[in-house]
Amino acid sequence: MIIIGLGTNLKVQNFSSLRETCGAAMVEMEHRGLKINRYSSWYQSPPWPPSDQPWYVNGVCAITTELNPIELLEQLFVIEQKFGRKRSVKNAPRTLDLDILAYNGVVTDAESDPILPHPRLFERAFVLYPIRDIAPDWRHPETGNSVSRMIKNLPQPIEIKKMTDGEGAFKTEWVPPS
View 1: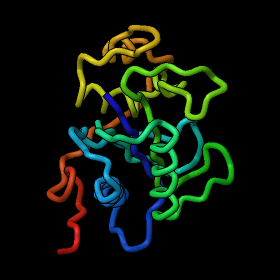
View 2: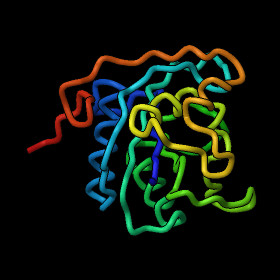
View 3: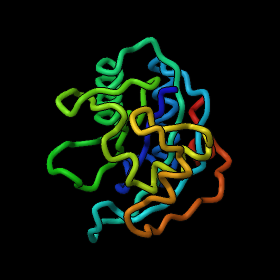
View 4: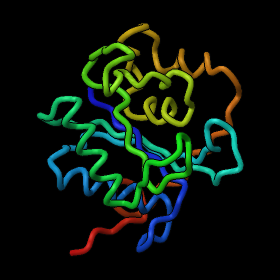
């Protein structure tokens, strides 16, 4: 299973909400040949690491693609740029963040790009809760830990709020133009 994490905490021009940006980004993913098979509910969470940034909206989706991990990462960067993402400072606020969380059980070393599975996946409630939505039986390919076990092992209590589903594309407010 290929799992992509989506998140944003900065509003993008032409979109009314953070979640609408995520819905439009998922439509863009599909336009670029990434078939979305499943997608989670959306969650609000504080920035990680803790800071005075605005809260994030986060979710995940499971996709199918013929792209290898490097090609997929390149496509995700192109989509981020289309939505105004500028990579300047680590952990800076962002208009759109797309991460490969897992890629069909592939495990790479810390020198690889991308590192698979995502190296901090197990400590982030904002990806673990959405993963549990779409794949409750998913296990970390390196440790074998279930997603439920990883949630129980979170290093600190982190506030996370499940959002009410939207009426548009992918449970967001986004309605693609006809």
